[in-house]
Image (tube, rainbow, N blue to C red):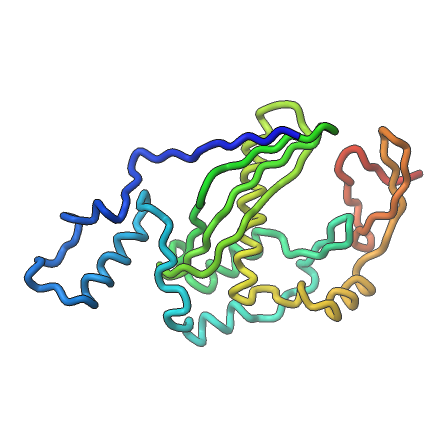
Length: 229
């Protein structure tokens, strides 16, 4: 197993020690509360050091926003992975966030470094941690990863984007979005209604194994697996 770490760089990165001179209010007019509020605003600007958990559990979101976040999931939008894990496509989370906070009202901030891992069987994995901010407030933080088979660097961009999507879905759990997907009773009922198991074969080892798919689906399985004849 080989693990490589790629460090994220930014020519515009600021640290909290450099806030001196950035504050808008004259020093003579500051109160402790106003200074804290302005520093928090600056800390969330692009390029600013992202180690802050500012705003965590400070106040609840409005009822209008909460109703959109906690709306029942559309069962037709749910997909299922071959191992039986059901999930909502990443674009659905983005739509819910945009409907709730508006474009620009939320953002996914990378934290730490991009990790690349190569396995002996040819599988490759990229991972990175991200933090979700809504209305300028820290909401949640999670690691996203994506494993794939490939031999060219052209796939790394897509893999990194998939890792980002994985982190977004996990962060949204703390907002209650599609919380049904973690309810065992709901999961079993959805599978009974929408999914079936099919036999697949490993093209390299000839091993046979059952995988889940949605009913009437023409889903293609990831290499080296194909639907058995």
